[in-house]
Length: 225
Ligand SMILES: N[C@@H](CCC(=O)N[C@@H](CS)C(=O)NCC(=O)O)C(=O)O
Image (cartoon, rainbow, N blue to C red):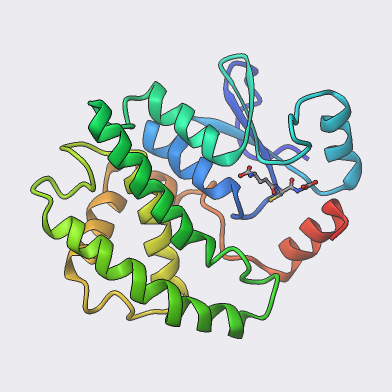
C-alpha cells in the first residue's frame, strides 16, 4: 500500500511498516536533511517477498530507502549515507569519529525502546528506568554542558543529534518527567525540535505514533514472528 507523497519516481521512497521501529531514525534523518520522501507500508507477507525476489533487500530485511538510483538497506548505513551526503557527519576526521561514537551510544540508548508494544511494556519500561536512563542521560547531559553551540559535536547539526533527539522524545513520551533534572537535555530537545524542517516533520503525518496493537500485529504477520 502506498503511503503519503506524490508518487514522483525521482523522490526518495522509504519502504517499511506504518510505524516507528527501525524506520523512524531514517525518517528523522530525511527530515533533518530536508529530503522529501514517499512511503510504502508493508501490510502483507507477499509484499516483502516480492522485494526480496526483486533483489532490493540485500539481507532480506527492511527498512529500504530508494534514493539517488540506489536501494539502500541497513538502517544505520542509510542514516550515514544521508548524513555524509548532506554534510551532517562532522567536518574533520576527528569530528566524524566523535559523531559516529555518539551516534552509536545514542543508538544503544534508543534500542531500549524498540520492544515497546512487542514484549511486556512493564518490563521494558523498568529496564529503561533502571539501566538506560541512569547511564545515558548524565553522559549526554555532560557532553551538552561542555558544548558552546548546543549541538553534540562542532557547531552544526549532525546525525548524532538526530539519534539523541529520537531517544529523548521517547524518554519524555514513555517516562514523563525523566528529563526534569537534566536542563541541558531539555534545552537540546527543544532547540533541535524547533529547527524548521524538523518541527514540520514532528508535527506532520510522517512522524509515526507510538506502537499500536494493530501495528504490532501487522509486523508480526508480515515477518512471520
Ligand atoms: N540491522 C538491520 C536490521 C533490520 C531488521 O531486523 N529488519 C526487520 C524489520 S524491523 C526485518 O526486516 N526482519 C525480517 C528478517 O530478518 O527476515 C537494520 O538496522 O536495518
